[in-house]
Image 1: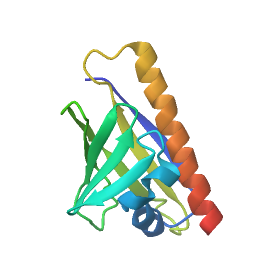
Image 2 (image 1 turned 90 degrees about the vertical axis):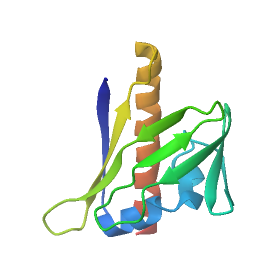
Image 3 (image 1 turned 135 degrees about the vertical axis):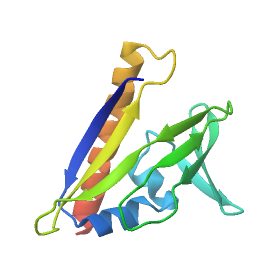
Image 4 (image 1 turned 180 degrees about the vertical axis):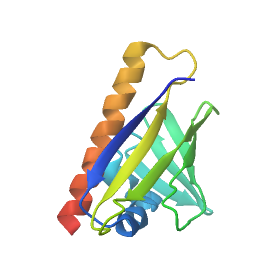
Length: 134
């Protein structure tokens, strides 16, 4: 399996980045590449994507910055998304967000590059939103 790590440094403490990003209701603000609208139904979260409605399920809340999630597409295909918020390790004033982008079966080089660019744009939006709030 081919994967690439897409990262963004954010001038906010890791716990603040995590607290914001773990909330599915915030997804349209920083991750429009995933979906444009989000809805909670019976404790489950759904986003509206170009391919239809998809379910997003994050890992249980934790103290380690793990934001891994599974996206169940309208087709029924499940995509696992490893995502972490990591403290800068010094004064804690900044953090790194690391997204492990995995090439899906049958994905062309062009589609993989397009996904990488979309993830980078989403992480840049996350940085902008959080640094503006700070």
